[in-house]
Length: 368
Ligand code: G6P
Image (cartoon, rainbow, N blue to C red; front, side):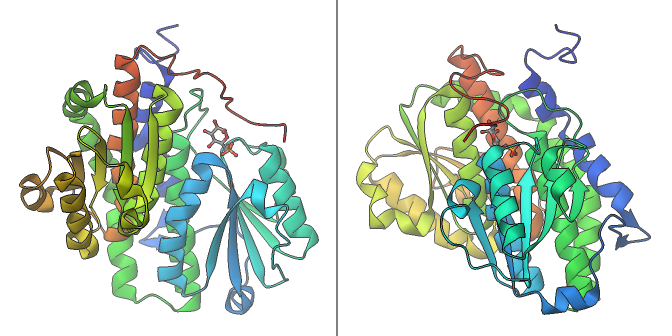
């Protein structure tokens, strides 16, 4: 009913709109007096110092959180992070020792591939830390440590607020471990914590401007093929933006690391192809924009996403821009993903798709 959906037409939009609160509920109880406090965890400093590798194991959007986590955690911890699809991990003879941390990410806590991969990681000696939304789920119960995302129940098949809160926990884990390991300066630590607290208000600002995204969706919804490009964390968000779009609108879409385009994909760019260019990560803005120029010159229509301060530089090259407020570069995925979710939502709406229950998809996949 409409009441269940909080007055919105779909659970997906309701859940998109709940993200400032979900992010706040996940983060704020775990920051005390400017410090990240993860009471739930039982790691000793010695364990963290001896840690050789973090293996992120997940499926779907949770895997995309893992892709962002790799950039974030490697930067913060200076330890190798390998991100693997749960369905691949099970059958690839993974290199796991007692010094491996398996970081398992799952909204439902019941995805069979993720659960089986987690059991395999444990059997091989890894310690398991999971990020889970459903309290008491199988993955949560079988983990050595669990951090819950306080997103509340997620009904729409296409995840939004669970993704955002999973990402929030990645930042908290990164900050907490980095402090223990001494791999972050106090100044950098404080700067990220400060910005973390401001994410909810910045999310609200993005959501308040959703009409612009609806307008752009009305311009682009008929493009038959969409490519999402970006570098670093922008690439990670592009993967999720592309998945959201294909899941609910059934348009063909793919995400590519912008620098990889020239090794094949650029052959698919022709007049009328839509390219969503994510260039919010300032250190690589110019690099990504050089790829935008390449696709533009082959006739693509480009919808660009960047931060407000870089918009003018982008606007002269692309067809339309979307912006997010500035934040710490590490936290950009939290803001960038929201316009991508809304774009997918409004495109699917214009196609008249069954947004909350897309064909062939399930909220939780409990068979292999
Ligand atoms: C299904 C859902 C996706 C989800 C994936 C992993 O495919 O449709 O939205 O990302 O499972 O689910 P999990 O509950 O493990 O995060």
